[in-house]
Image (tube, rainbow, N blue to C red):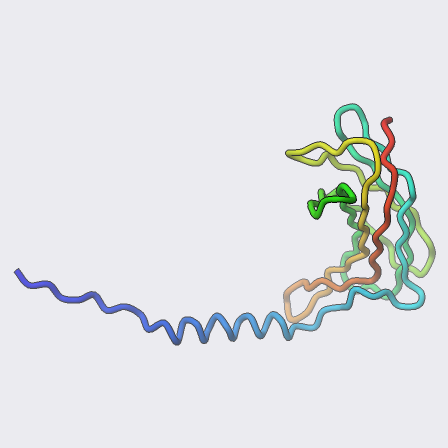
Length: 150
């Protein structure tokens, strides 16, 4: 009985293709995390934690010039931790006027307790680019807040 070696694909073409794909993604036009002069997002200094662990965060936003769906997203975590929990998302209207946003969510698997916390909020658009929606950041903010029991 004779054995024939099974041909293995060359590693170099596979790595070249992967590197090319990564460069295409990195070169794709995306927005920056800095807001334009007429765009902003704020975070209220107090958030709420319900008895069931649901967190409610809020603030204001202002944005202009959307060509795709825009959302205000938020996350919360302990000031001393790098772990963040996403807290909902609100559909945004980019008409240049100031609007309120309120996001609610129940962090899992670890609940968030009342007390000092760090909140991040982002106004992000999914802009169509060559058939793919790519993120464009209108505004971002980070702030220390107090979470109160509600």
